[in-house]
Length: 269
Image (cartoon, rainbow, N blue to C red):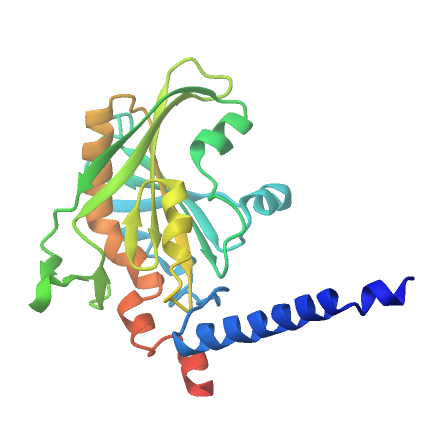
């Protein structure tokens, strides 16, 4: 090793500048409360505590994913349940609807999984993919002061809702070993907002002013439905009943931003 080069004035100066820059960056991060790495924030309630009976919807089946699929999914905090609408005949389109929810928290390391990737990887033939909006309509959803949107869940608990309008992606595909097309809808709840575009999830959770980050994929597959308008109608009716239950499981971002949740972290500071 040439020690003259290692300890040359230029190398020493560069090392000093690097050290000063690192100290300066840490000072700026601390002074302005900038959070480069996100801390995980736990669910308020486990997803499996979502009621099996909500309004006219009754849970009739649940799927347990294999270890390989869970590893690919990237989280073991998920549910894949099928509900039936008891107000419809069993063979009517949309009488059964599959609800898949997957919860993630901390610093994201990849773009979230979406049906365009997962379904095709499972052998489905892709068709069109479009973006649209669903509108929640339920007497259990109401506005309060400062235009905050609240809802009462099936247990009588009050929860915050990000909004009545839910941006969604609709993905048309032909399932493996099937001839008829199907339509799946999905969106994300992330840091107190509702988002349809996966790349926007990363942009939101990397907000430097937020200590914590979470994102949750919510996916609906109404069976026997291949028309977008019908799929949207069925999805809006289902989510009008189910969103208060889902949001009751996710972190209340108003509480997180105020430093009141998670409780364990708050008590340690």
